Image (cartoon, rainbow, N blue to C red; front, side):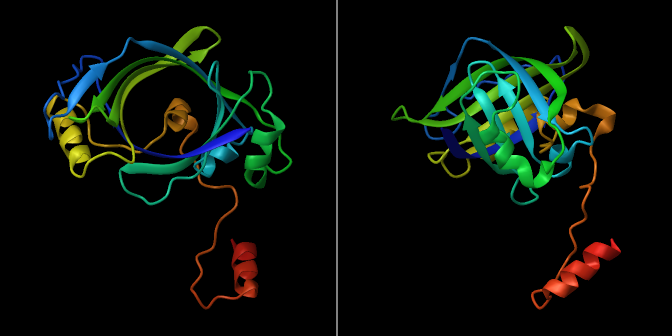
Length: 226
């Protein structure tokens, strides 16, 4: 059984010396509730030529969370808006349900492990005056692993929005984070960042730009020419 949600988040890079500001009372009685740090072990699967990465997709497994497929983001702004599909299951090989969801991109190629991440996550839940959850702020310290040895590290902040997020809160949160020393919003996903010099890459099949009057023949000719 799969669960689909629409993820809405904004990402900002931060230095190791970054100190999280207080968000209490920023907008309309907002209160902040920090959680205990959590360790996330993430394994990303892709083809040898990184077809999922090329198309802005990812397939990962996390113990206790199962398999997650993230589809291409909508729009080009700093806020990532993309469907996220979760399928229960243990690690090892991606389950058939997950493979079916990325088959159009992967086609007959084999999915294999491309990167493993060890993330120390600190979560701050933001609630309104009525106690409703309106947003989450995540502070992730990420290590890219080769075996058990970290080969690269980076720190990433995420502001995750929900249906109850009040108008204007995102802008205020981002400004607070920037004032505290975070970098400008960057929509690059963790998987792409973890690939280092292997990313970003163009899609291996070019998508021709067509007008509203284009025919199927036009599409075929442009694809062949590319």
